[in-house]
Image (cartoon, rainbow, N blue to C red; front, side, top):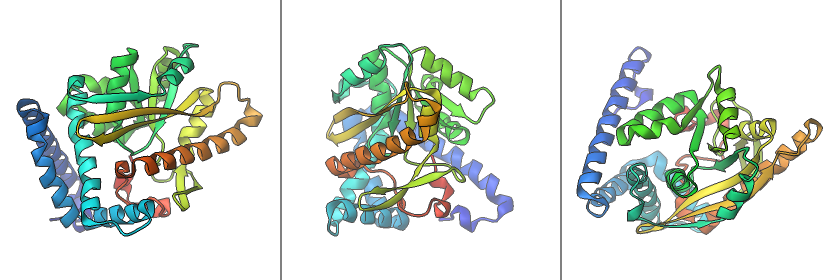
Length: 316
């Protein structure tokens, strides 16, 4: 099977467009099958997908093995590697049901909801920093369902376009919850959403190519974490909670909120120190979540690698 590296530059755009159309076609088929057959029957397909990636996706397989060895403290078994990939496939599959409002299919526990209520009490909105850990969709969907407040996702423009294409295949109404960066009015729209009391989600564990990072100890070794989300929170002077939507098996999820920082009272001269402290707190809480739910880590590449050497396709 060809990869982007195998394709001449002149054919790259055509290949990318064809691949994207093909992926969207597969997604639409999966949506139809999932909503027609129901979650239990359509989940049968996931075992085949997980088996394929364990056996025939060497790069992702190496990353999974390396991470599991790091978090488990020993060489992972084949069953554990399979469990890791299956958890990822399950959260992607469940996205279809969350975005279509099928909460009745799931048992969802929420820990720390009072933190959200307290942070929103002044009506200035809230930043929720997550990671490629568990399911963001369970949090976004449940947040809208339980708090009756919009939960918007902030992301860079190209990633927003790709995500919106996927969301449109699942439920077109979900695209309005994506807020792209990089446009002339992006910051104004973000501030307006926060001022309206919205919750804004940011996946703060990856950065686009060229964006500054800071090396922070994480699971035993330094890892590059992006500066951008924390500088943004400091500039906007808003509170930040860590968010995770952990898959617990079967139909069970646990949403957890943990305090990271409150930039509301931080003056300009204190900003650098507050950002440093927030980044350290974020990495520490992320590590705690990984140790608590090791099979929910969905960065299938060498996370500890120099960000300049990371493949662009992993930056989302």
